[in-house]
Length: 164
Ligand code: MG
Image (cartoon, rainbow, N blue to C red; front, side, top):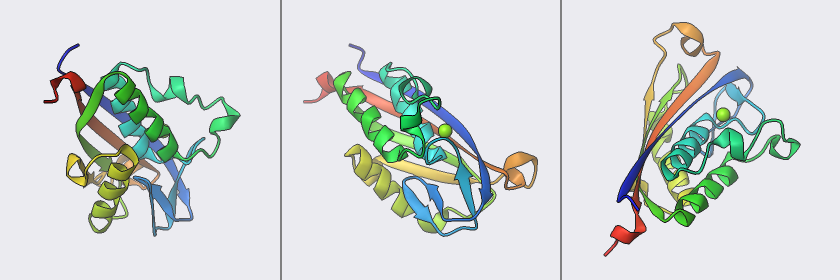
């Protein structure tokens, strides 16, 4: 087994009027929310895909297809927990996650610690292993116009065999 593996996840969801905004597993006061088949938590989807990719366990579309009624309105935190279980079953543990959320608003700074804590709780890791940074769309394109939000995540896994 290789000592470490890296995974990349990326996602984009449309927004619509009316809050709160479910992002990173928490509800943020906002007049926009994300739209999708599940609860549309774009950040948790990117993290889920990064973890699945790193562990060689497929992708979120394979595991939780949006054609499946069971996944309608589904809590993305539950999907993330399943991805974490697959990472562990594959013989790896999470070293760290580094994430970017691209959104014109709201500003993520005031909510960042809560998001770190929620993601860490869902994955059974420490908050120091999760980092989320916010970027804007510079007022251009669908993200800049507030019509969509994007997220990316890089996940690093290490083999449990490397633990001493
Ligand atoms: Mg998605």
